[in-house]
Length: 392
Image (cartoon, rainbow, N blue to C red; front, side):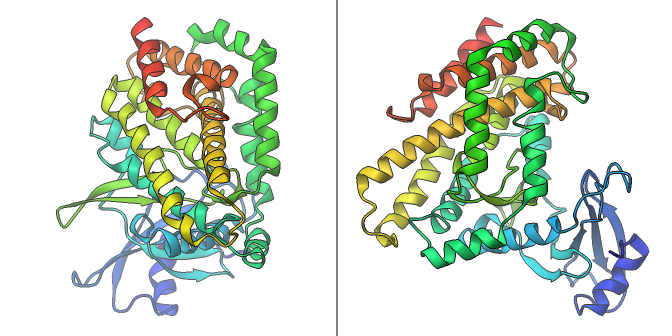
């Protein structure tokens, strides 16, 4: 039975694990949806604070009536350590992992801001998308058939099995938004458009293709839930800082999942603000991802993977990314978990209609933006978004 930490327990817990000394204060932070997160602040200002994250054996937001394996905390900690091995610049430091209590201790990120929150407040996106693209590129190359020896890949697959949270993705991203489901909701003005999408046989075929890819395409280690709420941004020592957090959905799966989820949320932020700079950053995301793969390419473990394979592989990843971006757009306006980017607008209807329309269009015609035989074209995607909001 997992001992669930409370704020009054955390300082003694850290002292017990030689992660703190003296005295300090603890407060609970985080959104509280899945896990508990505590910030421990030493009384000595010269000593850095740390964060403790624990996964209770249930979904934190819903309580013991909704059981969920606490193993997700260990999956998250292992994923962060793998990310740190290949992309340390964008990954928070994990200081300790407690396998008995399904908890881990990491660097304090409270000086940073969640990317979605920052964009909602009108912040520029800057180089954040390129930083995310670099992380996805470095991690996926290193854990792919190009970057990892077969035995390493087999071990990674065994360590990264994540069936419970994979089921969550299948249901809430790749399932429920496309059917009548209990927890779905949408703006009343979208009733007709949502119905048309759900009744479109081309949408159903593309959805089936993405579900199959999610279940069978073990391309590389992916974050699994890489949206704008999983990225922290800020400034330290005068330099911009990006940290990717919360990989509890991590698994060996299709690379396009991570790129697509992030891409969709950048598009949603752009639709909210009509900010073309956000859209322009999609090209930076893709270019940084490709650059990371090309940087690793000369040292690939399988010399029979030739340059032609790499070109085809990158095109297919872009094609997959557009598909996963499309289902994320649909989820954020017609599923269970909506985007605050849209919901906090005075009238979410018009912007939500643009996002839903984009999701529908990309699902049935990803080729409009290249990939799978055509050259990936992030600028075409940015142009499509701009055209659709100008018509709205």
